[in-house]
Amino acid sequence: MASITIHSSSTVVPSHPTPTGAFSFSECDQYRAWTHLPSVYVYKSPAAEVVAVESLKTSLSQILVPYYPLAGRLHWLPGGRLELDCCAAGALFVEASTDAKLEDYGDFAPSDAVRELVPSVDYNSPIEELPLLLFQVTRFRCGGVVIGVANCHTVVDGASAITFINSWASMARGEKTVETILQPLHDRKFLMPEKPLRPPRFDHVEFTKPPPVILGTSNSEEAKQETTSALLKLTKEQIEKLKKRANSNLTNKTMGVGDEVQPRPYSRFEAITGHMWVCACKARNTGESRQPTIVRTPIDVRRRMKPPIPENFSGNSSFVVLTPECEFGELMSQPLSYAAGKVREGTWKMTGEYAQSVVDYLAGQDDINWLRTSFHSKVPVQASFWGNPNLSIGSWMSLPFYEADFGWGRPSYFGPATLNIDGKSYIMVGPSDDGSLIVAIRLQTRHMDDFKKYFYEDI
Image: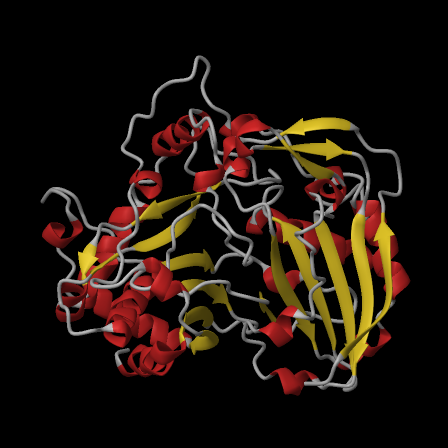
């Protein structure tokens, strides 16, 4: 792969004065990884050759006024918690080029090469010095452009970050102004603990129960295994086949509801996640049918809270849930509806009441470090290893990535630049408006070919 040449690196600060002082995070923010989510927007349209970098920087400076928390810096509090210093220190903006062509990167599956298209963050530096938002515009020899983004997960989640990017793009192409974009709401009151603090009303096994391990081995051994990432496309027709299979023997008994209730058909996410879970069991199968396994998935609670969190909320609003623990043998031998049902058992527990209980549980922790995962990076953490025999699957199916038109057309691809751990996956909307989806997944190298085989053969 051709090397990348950095031409300039500058700090973009808000164009006008912004609120200053300490900004308190919610518990939902606190237990997030404080590292950065690296992602890439790929543009291969001919118009991409006329990228106006100064226009990007000017509009970025303007949008950092309403999005002023993203121009701040973090600092540590006791117990592993964080606070935001709204100091208008700004975002990092890097200009780069490469002699490579876009096609040299294939499908832009997460890899070390793709990660180089996103600004690197020196996590050995004091946290007070780290930008929360970093961008890299890389021009390719073929005329294509990649915008690499790194955003700190403590400050915004995926939905909030995408809203920011799309608003910035609309300003850069001249369609919106800083006054006419959707104005972000930074108030964290929606996910704060109750006062006086109440004890949790549920058993939060997503924090207290260690994930299953491969029988006869240890997490440390599994964590050392070589891993690789892949992008797997699902057409609309394939998705419909999976949904049909998952719902082919849908009964009140398999749904765990009474006879008087009409069972709701399994969704795309439930069918695809159940399918991935079964395929992973087959690919990882050691011959031990009683091998336990779990799927872990984040659930956005914006619409599950009562009242719902406003759409313009800019922060973190998702909590992790777990499926019931299952065994390889039962998942591989049962119809797809069984796995889909177990996925639903996990996701449906996340009601507004459950989410508030999570907030109160987190608030009751003297030290939150043991709950925080690495998520995007290889920064050492105290949280459990969630790789083989388990999966961590996030849904990016409803996020409008492809609205990020900076003036030279829609991106031809958006995706994560890295997946940091075995079993990590996202189900993403594809670039075409044809109902297709893309699964980004990282598995141990020895399991990936078998996973791909089962993934398509079993549809």
